[in-house]
Length: 511
Image 1 (cartoon, rainbow, N blue to C red):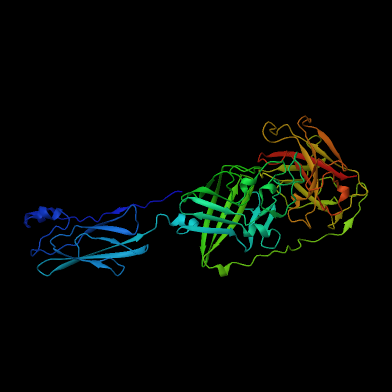
Image 2: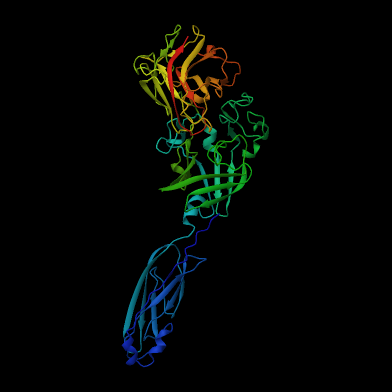
């Protein structure tokens, strides 16, 4: 826990003309605090103040008045003193104007006023912890978490979680931060089976727990790879909050916030002993909102929590999930009915939709300048793909008349394949119209293209009855088991990295 100290000393300097010493007897005495002197010279009020380093509400005043022997202090909060150099403790932080009236035996006086602000050095910290502790829960208004490539598009990939009954257990869990540097997570007896941890992990058993709220017991806390992740359950850990930078560091095995799999540098499968993230806190009447951000330089996760000083303002928890989207009418295309050459955006029966990957239709063929193809641009988004849907009418695809999907790909040697960028090709199918998190319920076919030729066209063909990845909890499924897929997606260069690359594509076909 960081403690910000504000220990500033303000000096009021009084400049006495040099020639005065020739006319005032005992001029040297005036250099001492409370210079004394009850003579006939007019008093000059002057003082310094210093805010206590350990108690920001206590201020020590040092009197440097000249030609005075009587003092009256008005501390600006209704309190006063006639001491020469008093110490005063204020009841609360704020701005105050202190006035010193210095007088002498001749009945003359002088006044001096100074204004200052007393600020709790732990004020920023206390926005997180309160005076002693403060409890945060997922914000039940609007979007509480989402996923996108960056802060400018925080919900491009996932429109976000809302208090709509789809994950009620997440909205009940509590994170309590204490001023002493500890924090407690209370799972409230339920846990969410997060995608990519409890299910849908490549090369691991994908059937451990389907996405759902489940009983938060140690026996149930096993990820898709068989690892014990029970450290994520209720527990007390420590934190360090750098209020200057907004960096929050959680320490202790199993410490987490936002989503358990969000680690300091990327997503994790098992609990860690340290997690660092960025937070910011906004104050509102009756409640505060804390935004927690995990930014992996290509994958941006914002999560919003609320803490209520007025509990009546917290919206009720929705426990019944609402239907998302709509189920489109089915089509049963014949071989070649769904295709695009990428020569013209309107020429095919598959049209591109919003995605992080760029596509330019009708560029010159790199192998034959007289022909046209598509330029496939992999951006620096960490997770991305080119997505296409049926055109001109949006329909779900019934695969009963189809056996394969194919694509011509050209890998320029100008790309740097020695980093995370590869010559891999992925083609998949998903349901975007009815499934909010379409990537949690898709199938894909993958080509490990490390030995593929460069600077020439290669035709990649996948048989529909042999997907390499099925993101649903029933192994062995194929597109023939589905009639709700409405989107074809293409990834070239692999996922989960930010290296860019340019490729060329043509002749995407379902046959």
